[in-house]
Amino acid sequence: MPTHSIFVLNQCYCSRWKQLVRVALAPVLSLLPLLAPAQTVQMTVQPGNPKLEISRHIQGQFAEHLGRCIYDGIWVEEGLNVPKQGRIRLDVVEALRKIKVPNLRWPGGCFADTYHWRDGVGPTDQRPKMLNMWWGNNLEDNSFGTHEFLELCQLLGTEPYLAANVGSGTVQEMAGWMEYLNSNDDTPLVLERRKNGHPEPFKVSWWGIGNESWGCGGNMTADYYTDVYKRYATFAHNYPASPPLKKIVSGANGDDAHWTETCMKRIPLNQMWGLTLHQYTLPTGNWSGSKGKATGFGEQEYFNTLRNGLRMEAIVTKHAAIMDRYDPEKKVALLVDEWGIWTDVEPGTNPGFLYQQNTLRDALLAGTTLNIFNNHCDRVRGANLAQAINVLQAVILTEKEKMLLTPTYHVFDLYQVHQDAQYLPLQFQSPDYVLGGEKIPALNASASKDKSGAVHISLVNLDPNKALMLETVLPGVSWKTVSGRILTSANVADYNTFDKPATVKLADFKGAKKKGSNLAVTLPARSVVVLELK
Ligand code: AHR
Image 1: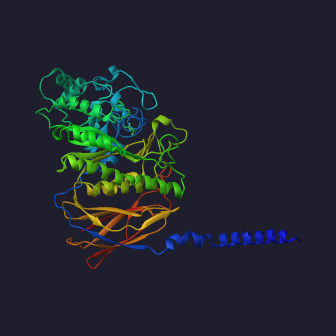
Image 2 (image 1 turned 135 degrees about the horizontal axis):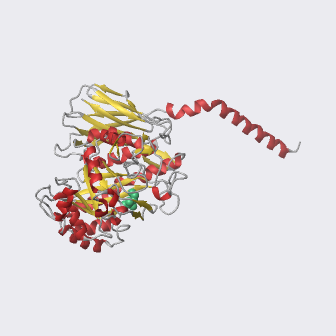
């Protein structure tokens, strides 16, 4: 046998042996990450400023006329066999009520700058149809309009947040909408509202003046938009029958500092209540090609998504710093009124409908993002996940009569304890989650104290393989018991389907203990945990 063959034979044996060993040890190897010693993190919960609250509005939702969010998600066919009020689906209402949605943004999005509110009031059969030119060229019958949206908000107990049409509308049109909703004088518009079934003013105070005016809202420059804004804001009147308007400036795309700088420089502070920011997370980071998979992704894609999502921290910090220079007293709120993960659509669905599944990964990202907002609550006083139902990072998916709660829904369920609670700053050094030579912080967290004195700590471990140990000191907090709930699953790519709607669900958490006056937590890999200390 030539030496060359012996070498090949040896190599052959060798790799076969390796293969055998690998197969034999597979069950043990798969447990290794779980057996790896958990790293210990020292954490301090600081007393903070008793006057600084985490606004409940950070947990807002967004419902655009897009795909199956409104039509089919909220507003369904009369014949659909689900509980309904009129055509509003009540199982969806009940689920949203449970997470205490503080505000709901409508009708868009890009759609808002094509929407003419008068087409959506009055007898339904007389409303004109319209083409939804941004989203799939869908023909809409305008059966869901202003009264229907405000009825939905009333059912939800939520603050309506309207976006006025600046891109293709007029100042008069917006001013008329405000008068129709908020005045109680006998003007023709108010008489019309009464005739349409609502004698009392609707009292809508949150008003976005345009949406993405740098893009689908008119492709304006920052200078031009600020002039347009001031003109619209001048005619956005307060009415004695309703609370004063909260006028909201259409803000920057991602890290566009120039837009924020121009708005802050050119719009007087007393003419704006808030300034917005839109920041989406794409797994690939690429708007022009594939945005990345919603399900069935590997660890590298998981890592990349979180790395991209964590940019929210730097982006919010950057815009907040610009705002601080013009508004050191932090009067103007920063509202991240569109955020969330944006992936490729579910195969076989209309690409214009932006329907995507939702995994544990997305829930970890939601927990992380809400922690970032909580930790910036001195400036971030509102945010809206895009979007509530059947679109992008939805909290609810529907299919005919069926409905499911996504993993992201459960994060909102967990985090509602922070709504309007006193902010408690945290101090800790996160261990790294390392993959392919890159690293991100494995741990993020935020904390608050509610009106009853209970302290809540929300913890997210992004590392898919390693648990973390936390040793926490809480100077100034007196507490006796700790309880908690956890969201996790076997795999970060796990998700809920209509056939298996509870693959990713909440469970009681038993990994936290009182040790003297300190708190010891074992935080499992790939988990969101919210603790309550009383
Ligand atoms: O949420 C989907 C779209 O994303 C919104 O209509 C638009 O404002 C943004 O570009």
